[in-house]
Length: 276
Image (cartoon, rainbow, N blue to C red; front, side):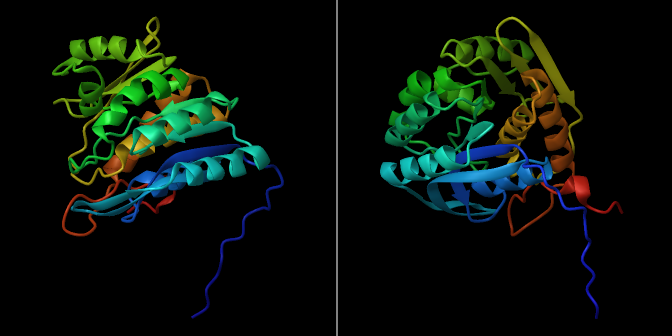
């Protein structure tokens, strides 16, 4: 059998560079793996700083091991000092020491930052030490251009339990009080339409999409945050980047597929998959 490779024109321009600082998902649906797939799909060059290794599959997280602070700092400096970045996205940071280290590094980097304050996995497994929550509030969120908590993370960080759209406004006010310039309150856990609220405390954008009947949604939070960071690196303003990310992740959810015996991943490559 002859294999023919699709030859594309050789690109000479360097694509925008986006750095993800997050944990590894051995199942490939979330974490660093989801981030890099999203970045490739959206036309930017993805780079990574690994903060933790997880043993993870469609059924949950069987184990997690954080990396030493020095290893995280060395990875970050290696990439940023030589290659440079146009945007940074953070995900699983695991401990107070890593949160504080990453926040310090971000504060010295001239690039927009998207903070996904990962607290628990899709299956309910803890991915952030309880004692690290205060560091997220006081160190990490103040350096964020955009913070993207889901409703469980809102409850962890603020104590606010959101049950309807009006509660999303209160949640946004609470998160903005910690210092990010913008916040996306992700309302995917509410019934009805998949609605998110983007606000900077002044402008307000309600982002709505149909809810797809698909249980295979592993990696949605990582994917959304990485897509926002990619849009910012491409020169979009925050509302445009978030709207574009919402469209991308909605398509990825619709195309999500089963893997293993549990919750499968969203399809990061849905934009280029053959139809039918």
